[in-house]
Image 1 (spheres, rainbow, N blue to C red):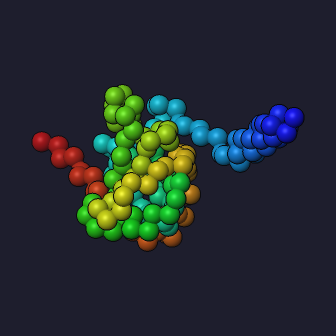
Image 2: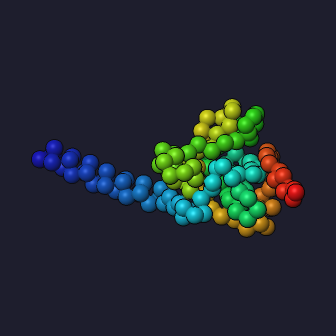
Image 3: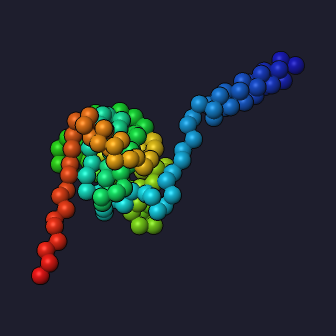
Length: 146
């Protein structure tokens, strides 16, 4: 009789612990494909802190990238930061949407997993940029008419 009670007790505890873990884990939401970060279009990024990065692609798309863990050396060295695509991202054209397996890294920092990506306004972007500790901006060259 003791083994049956032990098994039932263990099953009950495992089921309860599983539901608590499922409730505490944040749900991962990804951006629609058309809104994803096109890694070949990044012209500005800023490391706000060890868990927050902002990115601009072109003049109108601005993103807030939250990381899963502390990335203390992100932004240091050359390149200061780059995106690591997941296998599915590589297959469909090099976009970062906030899915599993996507990372950011730098020369002295192993890949740090991306927790979430969201679109932000110009005002939010400027506010984060003012607090950033590392920066990179690629200037767009003006087009010269012949």
